[in-house]
Amino acid sequence: MSVDRATVAKIASLARIRLDEDALDRMVPELNTILGFVEQLGEVDVTGVEPMTAVIPQPLRLRDDVIDADPLTGGGVREAVLANAPAAEHGFFGVPKVIE
Amino acid sequence: MSELTQLGVKAIRDGVAAGTFTAREVAEACNEAVAAAAELNAFIVTTPERALEAAGRVDADRAAGRELGLMAGVPIGMKDLFATRGVQTTAASHILEGFVPQYESTVSSKLWDAGAGMLGKLNLDQFAMGSSNETSYFGNVSSPWRKRGSNAALAPGGSSGGSSAAISARLCPAATGTDTGGSIRQPAALTGICGIKPTYGRCSRWGIVAFASSLDQAGPMARSVEDCAIMLEAMAGFDPKDSTSLDMPVPNWSGALEASLAGKRVGIPREYRMEGTDPAILKSWDDGIAWLKDAGAEIVDISLPHTQYALPAYYIIAPAEASSNLARYDGVRYGLRDLPAGANLQDMYAATRAAGFGDEVKRRVLIGTYVLSAGFYDAYYTQAQKVRALVARDFQEAWAKCDVILAPTTPNAAFPLGEKLDDPLAMYLNDVFSVPASLAGLPAMSVPAGLDADGLPLGLQIIGKPFDEQGVLNAGLAIEQRAGFTAKPERWW
Image (cartoon, rainbow over all chains, first blue to last red; front, side, top):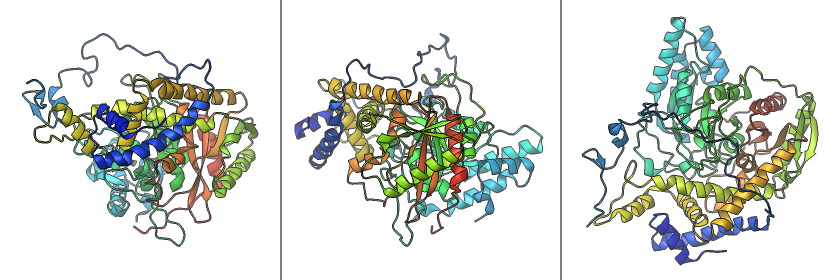
């Protein structure tokens, strides 16, 4: 399978990456080279093989149901959470208007 | 340059403990070496004051008779993928330029608790995506090595290229690395140093900028096997903040090092003898086989039939996970924001990510988005996960015949900067020998094996069973003792 210009533009829009015309022109053959390379996976007989999601099988743990069990990852650290925001206002993340 | 910069982790730690020199003297010597090596561009940010502070604490602890940690007095470089509280952490990307974490990664905080100090944040491929350190927003790292009779700049490998360059140039005795498809082993091999990627889950991923979460694993890089063992002990351990962290005790790997391999079987995978591999690499592999035989091991021929499919599976799985992990860079919560005039929220996301991500990162996010998209998910992503299961099964079956596996780390020695930059696929192929162990989550290390005809280092890779870092380190030690690798780059910077 190979991708055309329209498909790459669609993927870029899904990935929220703006690509100008030049970037699109460069990206189409690059992505096709990579997709051409991974195409060979189709040859592998995977009958009866379960897809691997974890290399070391282990159950997912649940933490204790306690508020702020770990103060570092618990709540009440608004200033720290906002410290690196490009636009923090009134204790919130600021974004362009989303409702007219 | 001071003699102290020539010492490794153990020599520094033991020298500080014995009072032969102070931690401060070591930190000063390393700070000076770092400052004098700006031309290598190994560091994105230097933190000499942090190194001195940590050294001061160790010297005070020693004077007060308090117990000293595993890494006491050892100044190290920190790959700029680990969140360090109060010190800019970028993953070598413009999108994180200026990001100052409010918390410390688990691995780095364990190292500071063990008495290590930070010389600075090391350059890397952007978001750890690359094999030459050329995708960094902060410029290429130059390898301290050069071909005999040439001044051409060589790649230090990647993604941990700042780490490998700094260690081989004697700027620091050790550094952290992370390995997703070979990012510890490949740069270690290309610069004549050691590096080990432990079993997936040994080192906490908490506070490490995520690339491909089912593969990412931190590990130490240093100039000897023993130094790697010591540093790995300081880095590893269960962390409830990482859902895939291994809840197992950390063995005393350095104390149990054993270079005799009597009774051990070493597997030689026939599929790794690939067409087009540099004859010098094949010769060093043969040397490695002879050395391990000399150490008492039995050499057995093994087959890992799905080897050729590991790399294509990796280049679906890793970008798929990356496209998901990197969705967080949206210009809202941290990092860069590009807000063109009149732009709405969606425009802002797209503009921010266009301005903030480098070309290789964009390529991988787009590939990942494509293989996860409706209609293609099963053909690409599910198929790759099934192939991954088969790659892992190959190893499981091999363990019936052998205890560790010996293979080359890379198909070639260091290549000139720029050589593979315009051909993503050629760059990807540099990881052909390292990716299978990553897909299977196995511990694997690279140790220097010798020099090629141009005077460039070559590495040998040892792959072990899950949780058997000890077996990997022991075989690494057996090679180290027999290879007698003492070459170091001649200083030109």
